[in-house]
Every structure is written in structure tokens, then in C-alpha cells.
Length: 318
Image (tube, one colour):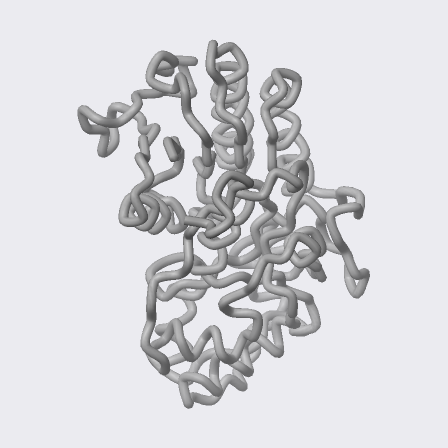
């Protein structure tokens, strides 16, 4: 298949591109020219509306992962606008561009996040649940709405609402490893807040599954089928690392250090189920947190995830 990817330098994208290429797919990276852009890549600059549209003709799929890291720094008005604009402006440019192509892609996967649902306590959520209140839900709504030109052009659009992607190579888990290995880890706040998580390998597998499954469109929760509370997560991580995880971080300390970002990223409770992935037959590599952490952190030998894209024309999924 011919596949274009934005956000190819991020945690998910940097793993997705080489794995797709290893499996024989032709992958175009859509990159800003001031980044790691090479001759075979597609040049774009969302802030100015520039994109090399001709290079996007006759693609089978576009995977859109680009966006400012929401946890890069404490939120202020400027940082919040940077987060919002990086998602809405880039998504709008990409979707208007592919909508106007002579040969548009068959599917566009646009990353979103379970932050769409906001802080919902013990409520059990799936793709039919409404959006919540706060900055992240507002950003996610605008982010997903920016794909409308592609939908109107008849492109199958999927919003993959990712939970916390677990990998020792980056993201939340990588940041937690040092304090937990020193025996300084513990629950955040009450620890009762629910977390939606997914291993990096399953994040990649979900993308391949969605590309090849024409029944999937609209929002799709990219999380493992067994959410856990923050207390369960920290206890499990400590057990896998064979370190105590008994030092809680009080709520007031987290709020003092991170402000509004702590409320929506660290203390919010989002209990999300991947109903659409399960109903469509996706087989998780890492459905259980303890097993996933043991494998990711070296307890089990890691192997590449299956990335065969199943299509109606190829019953073997190759």
C-alpha cells in the first residue's frame, strides 16, 4: 500500500514508519522542511498553509499523528493555543488538501485522545459517550471537527482516540521509570482516577487494523480492554520492577507544580472501553497491564507486532 504519515518523529510515528516499510508498504513522511525532511518526504508547514499536494495523489491511506506534546510544559495561555493550533490547523490543512485531490486516499486516520471524554469519575465510557468539559475535551472536539472536509469528500475518516501509550522509549512510562526504579514511585492524588492505556505495539496494530477494516469509521477508542486506576497502575509497575511504590504524590503538590495540566492529565478519571475495536475482531497483543509491563521492560523477549493490513481482496491479510 501507499501510505502517508504525519507525526513520524513522535513516539507512535517513529515506530510505525519503519515497521510498515519492513512489511513492504511504501511510506511517505509528511514533514516540515525545518525538521528531518529529506528528498523522498512530503514538505508541509501548517502555520502558513503550505503542503506539497501533488505528492499526495493516489495514496491508499493517510495516518495523521502530528501535534504538540500536551505534557511538554506547564500550560499557560500561549502553550494552550500552541497545543490547539498544532492539532486543528494541521488537521484542517491536511483534510482540505486530500479532499481536493483527483485521487484521494481511501481512508484517513486522524489521531485524537480519550481526553475527549474529560473527567468522568466512575462512569463507563465508549465511543457513543458524549464529550466532557475542560480544555482537552474542547481541543479534541475541534481536532476531530477539522476532518470534516475529508468526510464530505467521501473519504473514510477514523478518529483514533488514544489512551496513554506505554513504551520505555518515550511518553509517560519512560518518565516514570527512574523514580520507580529508585523506589520513589506511588499513586498520584487519591489514586482512584481511572486510566486508559495501550501498549505501543497495540497502538501500531490498531492503526493497521483500522486501515484494513472498512467497517470502522468515526471515533475508535485506542485503549486496552482493561482500564486500571492510577493506584493499580503504580502498584503493578512497582511489582514488575520489584520496587516499592508506596510514596503517594499529594494532590496539592501536583497542582502546585503543574497547575491546570495536572487537573486534566494526571488527576482526571476516564474509564474508557474499546468497544469498536473489540466488536471488529481486533486481537490485542497486550490486553493485561502486568504482562504488558513485563514484556516492555525486559521480562519477555520483544518481537515486532503484526502489521498485516487485511483487505477484502486478500483473505490472507498480507
